[in-house]
Length: 368
Image (cartoon, rainbow, N blue to C red; front, side, top):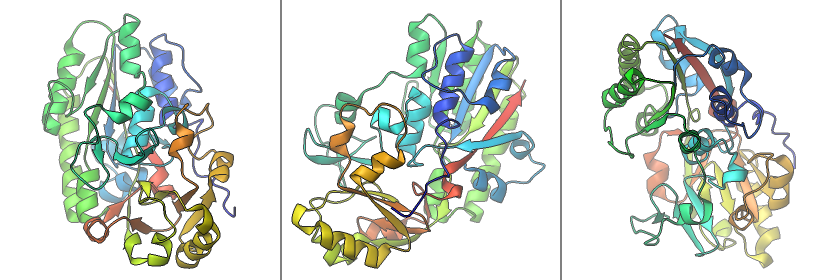
């Protein structure tokens, strides 16, 4: 193991933000709180809103929006995503207050040994298909968790989710903002967790600093500023689940010597490849992988994955050990290894690797 992995910080990450929210509403945090957020939460605003803009890493904020614009003028600090810095792992961490090692929500595709399949987690489909993997929701069946919102409501407080995939299913960003405003106008103290899938979508398609990305971010900024005119006695914290970089993409199918060593296709993420390798092929696999990708990926054994605490330093979920492969290949440059040529050609912006631009996320604070 040649890499020290010092960019991530589980004492100051999205899990810490969830713990800060729990502390603010009188619930017991599961770990350390986020000090750069605590100083605002301690002011006692009636409404606390955490809005996740998918992919809005600190580098994306600074590289696409004007310094004197609404969002950058309310920038307070930067802190750490979790590893891998990707939506499944990171939004689960801020929703639940659990590190990826604790939740076992590790990435877009996860291997579930109970059914011996790679599953696209948010869709409950078999990896690479639109086919439901089961009548049951496999990720929730084996790795269900308690959310901060559910916990606060159970304790008699008021807490709400605002996302496109939960009732009443707001399908535009203005509709998300309208819903936030509506909750904030209601009586009583409350916590509101909100999520929107941009600028992540447009950056995957067009690149991180494209005109298209800049236009989407400018529109988000205008809509947020307009919403804030309507808010009273509200602390609005805007952050991201992860950052983004422009990728240099290949398909693993173009490397037959590596493919021949694998038990199944890689899972987790194209920049954090979870690899199950045939026992008799491990030496060959290490040699071939490092020959092709040793300058761009750090190849860790399963034991080294635990030693580095990349997925977190908490108590591992009871099912996570069977989900982690023999090796984890962690991207440390822009090279990204997709499972198919189609994916490699289709993605411009990428994330889930181990670079500063992927791991650093902003704390944007608006006090009304």
